[in-house]
Amino acid sequence: MRKGCLILAQCDEEPARPLLDELEMLVKAGLLDRWHKAVLGPGIDTLQVQQQIDDAQIVLLLVSDELPRLLAGCEPQLGQAIHRGSRGEALVIAVMLRPTGSWQYTRYNKLKSLPCEGTVGAGADVHTVQRVVETVQRVVEEVSLLLNDLSAASTDEQPPG
Image 1 (cartoon, helix red, strand yellow):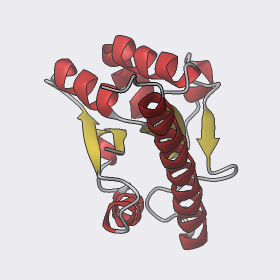
Image 2 (spheres, rainbow, N blue to C red):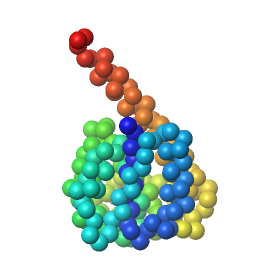
Image 3 (tube, rainbow, N blue to C red):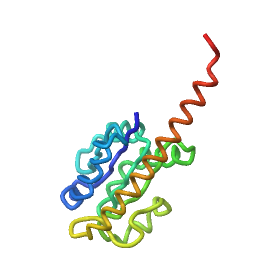
């Protein structure tokens, strides 16, 4: 199964709505089986977040000023996702939802981020949101091809039984 995980701050759900709606189209198009949505806020179940991140091949961090503070509670989970990314098992991408000054000071500032300029939150240019979704779509397609190749290779290596 191809799964994605969206990680965002609770207060960012509404500003992220246009992007979330567009990303859901990737599920409807059959490119992803589903998006998990890990909404970080008070009383978050970090075990549930861990499971969602562990199950995902694509992890999108929707970045705002709130996210770095909330990520502190999920350091092990996100660190594991980044480690899986270094092994080629997952891809973690930062999507700049709202302008933020603190992101550059986190350990995640080296992640690939979208869009190259601007943000995709409330009031964002429709074309910017569309470019981000198209980029995520290409990434999902590439990850799907890679996973299919890996799956076929592991099947080829199975001894006849």
